[in-house]
Image (cartoon, rainbow, N blue to C red):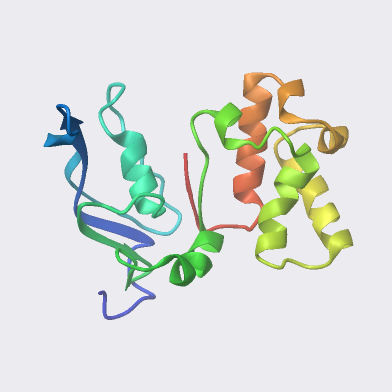
Amino acid sequence: MTDDPQNAPLVMAEDLRMYFPVRGGVLMRKTGDVKAVDGVSLEIGRGETLGLVGESGCGKSTVGKCLVRLLNPTTGRIEFKGTDVTHLGQRALRPLRQEVQMVFQDPVESLDARLSVGELLAEPLVIHRFGNRAKRQARVRELLDQVRMPRSAADKFPFEFSGGQRQRIGIARSLALNPELIIL
């Protein structure tokens, strides 16, 4: 853990490894591992942008999911603002969820088709107890404006939009809580 959180990188990963078991045979026993991420280390400071580049299936998204703790890395360490978050449980991760958001590659799978866009954008605000209903609705309008979507989009459902528009809805959702880090 970094001594001075003010001078710490926003996020730091050290020797991050994420292995997925391979199972086979009649009893589906573990026969090996797929090494999706194998020894990645990085630092991202406040105001910095980092791009991970690589071929399809090389582990870029897996690194992102580990950084936001949607996946628990096999080994390695993750710090956010100088605090080790590698082994925090779900309850302890809740404050982190406000500050770190992820935009998923496939907006079709990441947006609940049963909710309107307005409900999708308001959901993180409700979960994190942001204001009253009127303030949440105002924030939804701001988010739609930020991603250049018409405010009428709030009353529609994800299937009514193109793939690019759904991606913008996912971006708007990630911006809802004003996070310090967004992983795309």
